[in-house]
Image 1 (cartoon, rainbow, N blue to C red):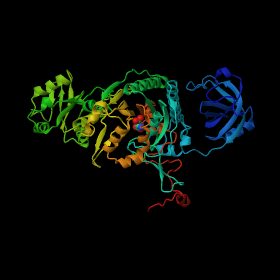
Image 2: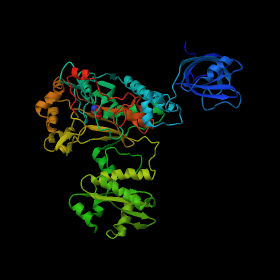
Image 3: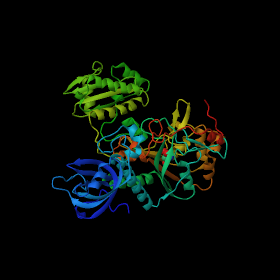
Image 4: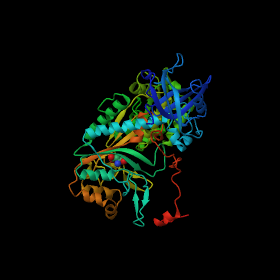
Length: 585
Ligand code: ASP
């Protein structure tokens, strides 16, 4: 037997017991001839004492120990002398007086200290991830991930869901990214695509009559790694038959409430708020509103369209709108803060930004000459009663004012510390448009994916006015981040063909790429729908990590490489030949 106990479990109950422990040398100290070793394993740290007066030879051996050596120690549990206890750890009242020592393996000096307090650079941590994961703060995130996934599995299992694995070597499943391709040696010139999601297979499982499917599924998307993305990532993927949107909302709310209760002991109220896509854009300027603070976008077109300011009149005259947000604490905004906000408005395409400050009944505004003072007070009375305010105003076309103000509301909230970081604000965004217009390619494309059902009452208009069609797609947003996304699907062959046609797939191409799905729909496909969570992101948010890399055991960098294994790497000429592949210069 390697060990009788682990390093986190011994306490005064075990006094005078003979024990055998294994682990890594966390630290060594020499105090007045006694050698103290902190012995570490996954469970904790136990203090081992080597006393030269009890065994000189053993003490000499202990002197050779270095950090990260792997050892086995036998000894007796003793109470630590008064004043030397460590109340911070569960084993802090005892120590083990060593009687024998075996070095199971030595270690080079690690490139960084294995400790909770020092934080090496990420580059180094990823290259030596196996050492980084010896550090409790890093390992704990992976253990937490395990608890989250276990909790989800238990919940869905109880609710009759079946976990099914779907293929990695498959055909393209479009989710808006590039595919990772895998050449087929046995079929020269042909390629598999790694799945961007299990979308088509989960739909086929519904045709197969499984009714309730889930999978903790690896997905692969070859994207430019903007923001916090990974080329391979994990979804919690769900699909159900004979359901509508409300059934999905109910299931997911229960799952999420249960998850936060069990893993974080946090109580969340059901049902979650819902907002349509169009409302979200109008009120928050984004399809993922952060509702942890109150500022909302308001439409001042009617109130300001007749003012003397030419830009306002012209903007409204050509179909634009005048929109604004009212923020508290106008005195906290210097001119350079306002310049920064103007810069943000420019980046989102707005021609300009204007504002007024109402502070202690005094008005400051670049448009003071054109708008009567009473107007400012009247607006404040209506939208921000009885308080000092900075009102930021944008007049522009289409959704530009909303989108620009949406970014500003976030900026302002951060600056004024309006965001409650402890809150978990869940929000459903519904009725996404079915299509959007891809300007670069000058064509219509699916907003979610082409398997999403239109709203029933919009189907008649599909071909006439595709960009006005609302879909049965929904997102779950948490604190301004999209954490899950799904839809009720098309289950009718003819409707699916119409959609393919609208996004520019010829009948022939639709058949080539998705013929198997179209055919399956001819064999009694039930109405169905589902959703998928970005599981890495969800776990990162729950464990308050800045990046999803922290909750992935072996993540890739922003450049999509693995610093530990140096993947991707060149391959042998022989391998390429077998695959019939030539590298172009
Ligand atoms: N397959 C979709 C995605 O990856 C999720 C869904 O529609 O269920 O976003």
